[in-house]
Every structure is written in C-alpha cells, then in structure tokens.
Image (cartoon, rainbow, N blue to C red; front, side):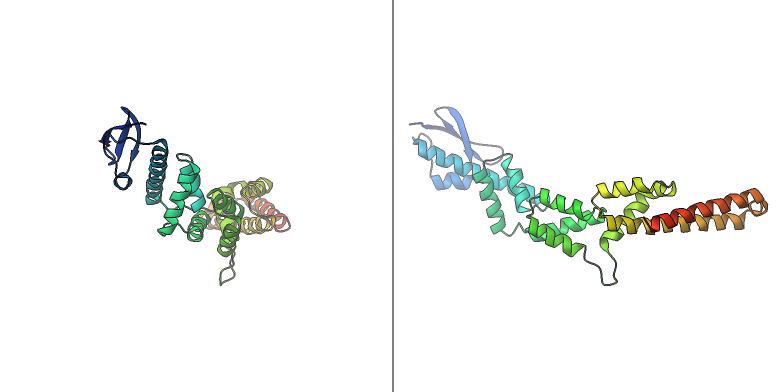
Amino acid sequence: MPRLTQIKETKKGRLALFLDGEFAFSLDEDTFAAAALHQDDELEDWQIEELRKKSETRRALDKAMDYLSLRDHAAGELYQKLCRKFDAHSAAYAVARAGELGLLNDVSFARRRAAELLRKRKSRREILNDLSAKGIDRDTAADVVEELFAETDDGESPELETARALVQRQYAAKLAAGKRDQVAAALARRGFSHAVIREVLWLTVFWVWTVFMYMCSIRKEKSAKYRKSNSLHWDRTSLRSKWTERLMIARHW
C-alpha cells in the first residue's frame, strides 16, 4: 500500500500530501484533521480516492466563493464556470452549498442583470439571450423580462424608450441622410420588433425634423444676409419640403 511519506504546508494554507515520495494532492486543514492522517501512515486505494474527491470538492467550493466575492452569479452560470476547472460532481456540490448559504438567487440575479442591460439600451430579445447564456432557465427569464418591459404608470413603454434613445444616440445622422431602411435593419438585428421599429422611426424622424426647423429659424433670425438672399430662401424651402416628405414616409413605413 502507498505510504504517506511527507506532509508539507503550502503557501495557500493547504497541506500537500506526498505518497511514496511523490506529490499526490493537497487537502484543506479541516479535511486533513477529519481524516486523522499522520506521516508514515499506509493508505489503501479507496482511502486515497476518497481523499482526492474531498480535496476536489473543497477546492471547487473555495473557487465558487472567489467568483461570488467578485460579483453575483446565477446558479447555472456558476456551475458552468466551475466545470471548466473541476469535475461535474465537485462543481454541483459547490453550487448547492453556495445556495444553502444564501449566496445564489436566480430571480434576483436575473432582475438586476436585466435592468442593467436595459440601461445599456438592449432589446427584449438581447436581454433574454443574455439571461439564457448566464444559466437562467427560460421561464424565469421570460417572467423577468415581461416584468421589466411592462408599461409604466404613465403609459410609457420601456422598450420604445430604449429604442428611441438608441436611435437618437447612434442612428440620427443616418436618418437625417434618408437611410431609414439601414436604421430599421440595424434595429431588427438588435432584436427590436417591427412594431417598435416603425414607431421609433416615426418619433425620431419627427424629432430630427423639429431640430432642423428650429436651427433654420435661429439662422434666419441671426443672419440678415440669410433673410435677404432669395436663393437661400428657396434652398431653405426646398429643404423643408424634403424633410416633410421624409416625415410622411416614415409615418406610414
């Protein structure tokens, strides 16, 4: 039978075990004390295997605590990350233990994550996909997203507001250039519905048109040359007609 020839403390506070002069594995202090090991003990194969499993599960739990100290995790996400470093049994044990300690709550995590993504102007579909990737089950993700996108007391739609803020921030120039179809395609790729896209394009084109007309009026008031120039007058009129046409097209798109 293999003999425990050396016990050495590691820098991480664990105890390294050497069997027949070669490093085998390390144990945390609690597991080592419970096993009542001493140097020169002879260990049977089943004892060694049992100690290896206990070592692995404790290391998985320690790693889970490290992950959770950095940020919240969904149970499924934590399990997936642990499986990259440990066997499935150890990962499952660590997740279960973290849950028993009250460190995991998928519903609370999903709500916080979804709200964060909404602030980043993500669509309903993008948020659902993200929650799924984090290990949130489909029903929980759907309930959280439905709750998040419910109309506010004043009748505002969070999804419409998100799309409008996104368009005004990133796509206003394209709309001003008449590239409505490109903007619509970009919004569709990001997961916004056709109804939301149609409504937000109408609202945004109206906003751009209003800003344009306001700037024209400011220029007219401040520039005597602008007021007297017949050619500029017709140019402004032409631009107004052009924007009015775009506005009507967007309204019926």
